Length: 323
Image (cartoon, rainbow, N blue to C red; front, side, top):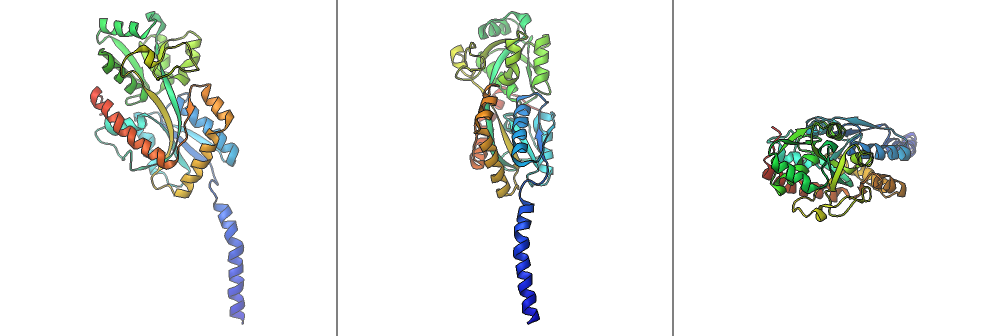
């Protein structure tokens, strides 16, 4: 009889404790580390911080942004993959993450197989900006100058393999000009050197360049997207410029390691997608030129795979290498 009573009491205690254990284990229960492979002030950094603040408001857990602007995102990727796959270390990435798959002869990871897509975050147009000292007024002016001075016109990028690098290489191929690549750690550094005239032009995320353009610090010639941007509506679009191969679009997304449990990945996706669909977040991003573009984890995984394949063609045509 005592044995039966003991078994019954044990069963009851388990029923009582189980819900408490589930509640205690509900994700997240501690701060989240958000790796950003670019400098503070870059578009990827801006979006990571905006999303992080919203997650804190939702969950009451801090999202600590950890900027690692080195090796085109390779260092940040290694840090992500070396952390426990528990959802407490994530990484915001840009187009450069998929470029690296073909830019490097060998990476310490597989870009497609070793990461878990959570969602695409936003599309970001780029704007072709030039140093004001050149006095250029159009894309044609820049092309004519580069043809008149082959190998003497420098362009900035946010690092080897960055979207700005690939954008300029695609522009180079489309126009047949001979220009020199000068990589920096991130967008802020690149813009600073365009302002000073150390480099002549840069395909900047519109997020970082708009205020400088409006303030007369740099000259904008065109946006690289098919349509004009509401942020700089007076600038011609890529289609208006009429140069085949000029169109280019940046993006940023959220990744975890491939072994991230499905339930945590789905929890992150649901919350981040909810945030991206909030009117105030849409307005906040649109004023910066970024357009929210949420996806399911499966859709983002497929998107990454397609981008790796698409950008491999650009890398091959340009001859660009990182090692």
